[in-house]
Every structure is written in structure tokens, then in C-alpha cells.
Image 1 (cartoon, rainbow, N blue to C red):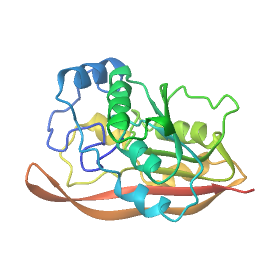
Image 2 (image 1 turned 90 degrees about the vertical axis):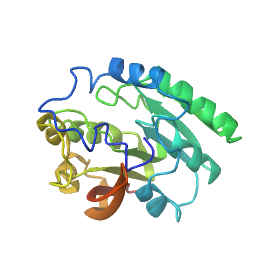
Image 3 (image 1 turned 45 degrees about the vertical axis):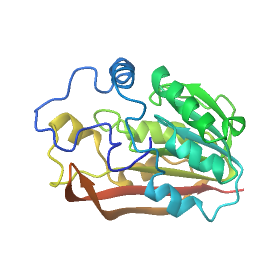
Image 4 (image 1 turned 30 degrees about the vertical axis):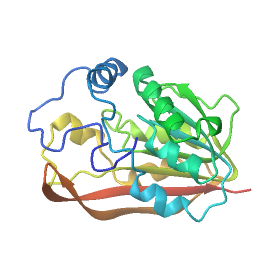
Length: 224
């Protein structure tokens, strides 16, 4: 997803004890995208994506949980050939529209798939990335293991999410879905080596108020 100040698939200001029952499911996101204006998110690329990918040689990329396609468009503009994947058909339709508006439709394709059941099916990419994807109850470990299967020899895996923080007034279910980078390291295959596994402190503005969050950032590389 794009716009990291909004894309944890949770509400920073929410203080309910539990999210709506469909919050982690495709149906809930279909409703959100169908009922919103042209953009739910800003369309800007995520900060850690730009930081880690600008120096890489463009090749093929897979962005899982791409939402409205902000990161997909940015990658395509940098010369990557990108597959944007999400479990929401409505989100993918918006992403395709935004890619066409940006003039990069010929460099992207779309894949409707749930990250929790994703399988690479033999496909491999030079970059596999996901930002602020938070499956419930610690499910990101299993998702990371699945994503690593799609990384080509010499390619990179970039996984970024929200770490639990007292700055975030969120439900218990949302907090259980968060993680720190070290939580994901054991999910990597033996031939995928860690480049970065850290929390990156970052100020962000939500509803006009500056809060501080930690971006859990895992960058790994499959040996050639």
C-alpha cells in the first residue's frame, strides 16, 4: 500500500477495543474503496521503499498489498516492470486507473490474491515488496515466508510495517497484528540473507497532529 502515514490498515486515532469484524478481510476493503472518493491514500511512494530501492537496478517487481497503486506507479516510473497484487478488486481497479493516469500502464500488471494464501507458483521477481500489511495475530511471519519464495536469485525482499507503539491509539486486535523486523528473520530461507532488520523512527502527521512511529524495516537478498 502507499502513503505510510495512513496505510497500516488500521486507524491511528481509533480507541475501540476491537476493529470491525471484516477489517482484515477482502469484503471490508471492497466496501471502503467503493464508498470513498477517487483516492483513499495520497498516492505518494512509501518512504522506506524510496530509501532502499532508488539505488537498485530496475528489473521486475512484485508489490503485495498494493492498494491503490502508489508504490506500483513510483516503481514503474523508475523503470521497473511491476506486478501489483492485492485482495481487493476495487483497490486494484483504482490502481489500474492511477497507473493509466500516470502513463505507466504498459509497465504494470495486476494480480488479485490474498497475501495470506499467496504462492509464487514458480514466478520470481528481482524485487518483492510489501508495505504496512498487517494480517491478524502475528500472521506476517507466514506471509514473509511466502513472499521470500518469489524472490529471484540476486533479488531483494523489502517488508515494512508498523511496530507496536504507545503513540498509536489502536485496538488490541490491531496491536497483535503489528510486528518488529526481528520477528520476521526466522521466516527467511537459508539462501536469503538479511541486509537490514531494524526499527526506523519517523515523525508523521495524522489529522493535523504530529506523532512518532517506528517503521519495522526488513531488507533481505537472495544469494545469486
